[in-house]
Each structure stands twice: as structure tokens, then as C-alpha cells.
Image (cartoon, rainbow, N blue to C red):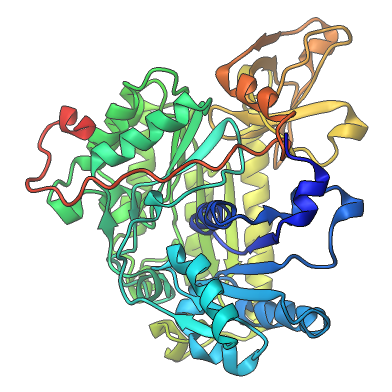
Length: 511
């Protein structure tokens, strides 16, 4: 068994992630690469054995969030005195900011050792070695993807849940978004590669998988099958031991009826859907180059609820896009009320250099954007609360999680996600079986709050049933591991190469 002394002798790393789920998944790859190269996660060491900073600090950056560049350079500035004290320490910057700013990062922060892009995360260990040998910054930015990230080693964050990328990049041209220029055109994986990775995860104890892509429902565009995503969902339903399948994020313009049918007819595809609205105004949607309008968007939700009545639907909304009028904003409020989102990620528009929207006329004053944002939050809170109150009195199945409930200790509850992805805080009756993270628990909901459900029915004789799962077994097995709670590094999936012909039937997904 690895000891603290062994860890102390090894070089340490610290991967710091900003941004979306794609970045979180990329960080799992970066951690896997570093551990394969002999580094140890600094956060795995006992608190009294951790150095002031790891030997290698990696920032996996996002260019979409507001003030992303200020945050990056602020973090780099905090490390400068540490680097001065320990010149052997290495700092690397990757992700979307690295792809966008390239050599600018080294100019602004010359104490950075490595800059790498979104298309070559697999180069990190070699770049660190080169920078150490050459005693200069190494900058390597590829313009297109050469190796799909899933071929790389991975240190997963969870024993019982995993991310699986089905595509990278995006073919859309939304005027507010810089992702296509940083992640490139959409590249799709072979269905067989995806299913092989999922089967490997299930064999390790994973019970829930989330399929990832900038636009998951255009999956198949690269090999000419517009029905490929629905086929992939159905094929996931054939994997023994896979209990829950989720996906994010689809695009309303490409969301087809066959995907809705696949969701409804495949038992392990969860009744939850994240469908980005962005704006309820048709004029603003046109200016955003979102190739759908509000009526089509609401029509999709109607079709989903007709086949999956209890589906919980979430969304993204941008307030204050250039040229947005009061009437435009009122249209957004109207659509929010009609859509009945269970929750929404809401953003105030801010200029992203390099996007078409950055140079549009009629940029709105901050005060106007803030006032609209506050009103939107108020309306969505009302809708979310009403939707969650509808679940009161029902029994829900919860996948028990770690770290979901910040107040679990003081409230004496555990937390996890229901099938529809709502966050549930539930009570465990005194003397009852204690579930493990990764186990399933059926509990009765007693209260629907705006952002979560409370399930205390068991305290008064209501439903409480624990079902132990392979996910719980996997979590339990890791508590005595060298890094408690962290799965071992798994090797990357081998590439099957480019398909010679497009798959034309569902069974081809398993090829």
C-alpha cells in the first residue's frame, strides 16, 4: 500500500478547473496523464503533509465565463511569489483561454512554463519535460483535434458516475459564443468506441453515465446519420448494469422526434432534459443566430412532456444581449412562464472579444441588464418553486452522492439526485440502514423548495428503502485506496479509426 512517505517522495500536481462539464472531463484526463507520468495529486496528501504549492499546477481554463481572463491572471499572480521561492515548480495553462490567448499568456505572465490548447491535452507531460530541460516556456497550440481525448488515461472524480464524450467541437455560429473557434468543428466518435467506454466504466462500478458534447443531438453529422444520437441512446439501454443515462447539451434546432421517442422508450435514459433557450424573443434569437424561434422551442417541450410527463426541463438564458428591448425581455419572461423550467442557468450578457456580438451596436448599460436579470431570477424562482411543490407527496429514487448537500451535517440528512436530476436532501431514520454514495434510496418528498427537494417522510413512517448497488460497492472499495474515494487511473480507450461507412441501424452502434 502506498504510504504518506511514498507520496512525499513523489512530485505532486494540482489541476484547477474553470468552466463547463467538458472542462471537468478534460481535467480528469489531465490528472490521469500526470499520474501515469508519476505525479501524485497534492489534494490526496494529509493536510499536514501538503506543500505550499504542488510541483506542477495546471489551470484548465474557460473563455466563456465573464472575466475569465481576469480570473486567470489573478490566479497566476498569486503563484508568482511561490514560483520565485521555488523555481523548480512548474505552472501550465490549458483549455479555451490558452487556445484563444496563446503566446499572450507568457507575455503577461512570463513565469508560466507551459501553454497548451484544447486539441492537445495529451501533450502536457512532454511539454513539462521540454520546459524543464530547455528552461523556457513551451507553447503548443494545435488548430484541430488529432487524437480524441477518450484515448488518454483518466483519473475520474467519481467511483459511481462518469462522463463520456461523444463529440467535441461545434458547427453552429452563435454570435455570443467563442467555443467553435476554440474547440473547432464537430468531430464525432465511432458508436462502438463510445459503447465500449461505457461498458468499461460499468465494469468498474459506474451506474450513471452522462454523454457529453457541445451539441450532442447533432451527433452523427460527421458520418452522415442524422438519427445516430437516438440510436446511441437506445444502445445505452442494452448495457447491463447501466442504471442511469443523461446527456448535455442539445440544441433546439436539431432536436428531433426520434430522440424524444428514444428517451421515452429507453428505461435507463433519465426523464431530465437540459434545453438551452438563451432568449424568448424571436428578434434576439435571430441576432444570436439561434436557428429556432420561441414557438418551436415551446413545441419541443410540449412533445417531450406528452411522452415523458414527469420530465424536469432546465435551460440557459442570457439577459441583456445587444439590442434587446423591453419588449424582447418581456417575451423571455413569457416563454419562461410557459416553459415551466425546473431550474435555469441565467447569465448577464458580457462582451467576449472575438465573437460577432462583441462589436454589435446597442450594447446595453450595466444597470439595465442588472434590473432585467433580477426580474428574470424572480420569475424563474417562482416557477421553480411551483414545479418542485408538485413533487411533494411522491416517492423518488435518489442516487446517493458525496458533497451535494453543504448543510447535510447540521441537518442530519444525506443528499443525491432523483431520476429527473432534482437535488434531494433526505433523512435517514434512526437505526435504519445507512446508504453509501452510489447506492439508490427510495424516499418520500415532504417539501419542495425553489432549488431542491426535502424528503423527510421516513421520520414519520413514510417510505425509506435502500438498494445497494455496484456503484456503492465501488465507492466503499475506494475508501481504503491510496487516494480515498478516488478511482484508480484507467487507461484510455483504443481508437477504432474512421468508419468506412456510416452506421445505418441501431445495432451498428455496438460495432
